[in-house]
Image 1 (cartoon, rainbow, N blue to C red):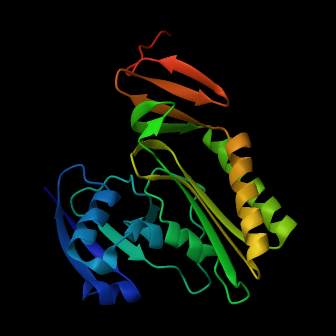
Image 2 (image 1 turned 120 degrees about the vertical axis):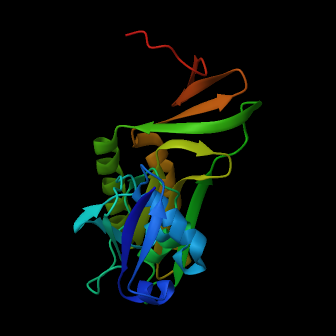
Length: 232
């Protein structure tokens, strides 16, 4: 076990009931492990990693950052200058409500969100889980470009997020949020953004089912074993 000091700022102090506390965590724990423990302790900590920035020993950290005995972990809500946009690509759970909050504003009378969830069937087969793989630098660039194009074309505010890695049945793989003064533009921009990113962003899906798996590459299906051998 390791002992880690937690620091809380702004409203998180009210949630924690203190500006700091000490947690005992398993060896090799990460920031995500600490977040899960805090979520277990209090309802106000739910979806913690989608709402705050984290620093370990005074350096910004990610969910995957490994913690050591004696580390200091600071949990910080958005600064008064504005909220940080959520990452375009993530290996964490997508919080659609947090994505919606990124685009909401006083001038917007309509907010449209779309969430693509993992279903348990495809092509008459029972799906066990999915894996998403992407060329991250280009995927982020393309997602940002599409978001900017939608915002300029329809005069709307847009946010988008796509998962990578393994996803279980029912988990959200991609989400889009669009806000505008009127619903028509929000619906149009949301559909265009979702349809276009599926066609142009370099992210691929692998479907696992009983007895095997396959990659979905455009209209083509490329069969592979459940545990492919390395032929290189």
